[in-house]
Image (tube, rainbow, N blue to C red; front, side, top):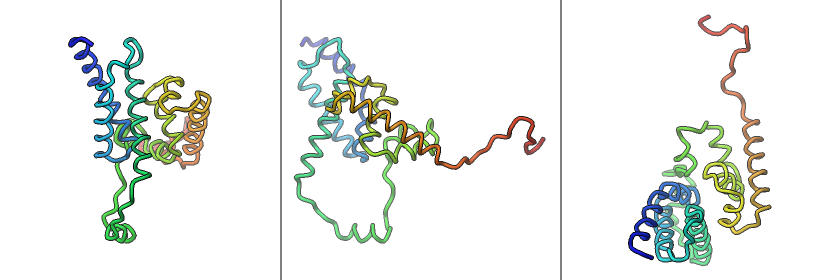
Length: 190
């Protein structure tokens, strides 16, 4: 590739850093791991720039690299020996120093999502949360999601449908915290 097309390619990648990082955070649920995952993704994208077909969806290509890298990292971690810090285990059992990790959903949607919807989204099983997130937040097509997750498109459609239904059911179970007065009903101060 020429120097100008390489710089254009790099500029396009830089424009997509924020959604890539957000997805890395959602997958890893850990800032340091998300940064490592993003870095690995960018290195692979730049190394294999010649495999990208200009005119196709760069965002979907990068998300595919990100998801495949994440899956490969998980497989590697499953084979790695487990180190146990017995002191931290004891602290955790006593409830000392335990905090909930900042999830990507909480970070990205804190200002725009209702707390109940955040809790419902966090409560979805990973496969459904991932499919719903990629479709409804990242706005990828079913075909792009199927390619990213390496599953049939029918599976993607099913996960999105079931995930949305689970979200709706979860939201319906939440008690109303604010009740609007019915028309003609008296309100405070009237």
